[in-house]
Image 1 (tube, helix red, strand yellow):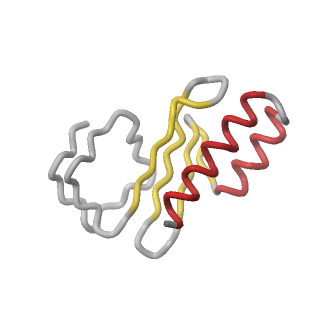
Image 2 (tube, rainbow, N blue to C red):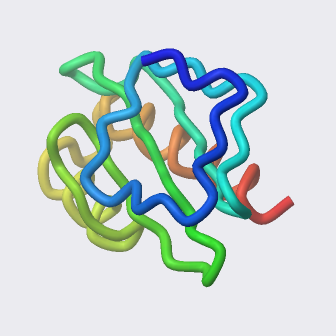
Length: 100
């Protein structure tokens, strides 16, 4: 989707798949969207949406949940493998961007 210059103020992006979307110039109404990838064994994207109230939705491929739940899933699935390290680095990158 090309959302360049789109005004999404008030839009509910819950459940939206933004992989490949061009958000250049879009007004997200105070929301933040961070995408990192491809990462992990499936070479998918980590997409995080932070809404104006601070609520965050973390998506890794088709999985959706919280940052804490994603870290637990990565540990259970990949442990200390290269894929686990890659996911943890991507999560740390997103966290650094959102907290800047």
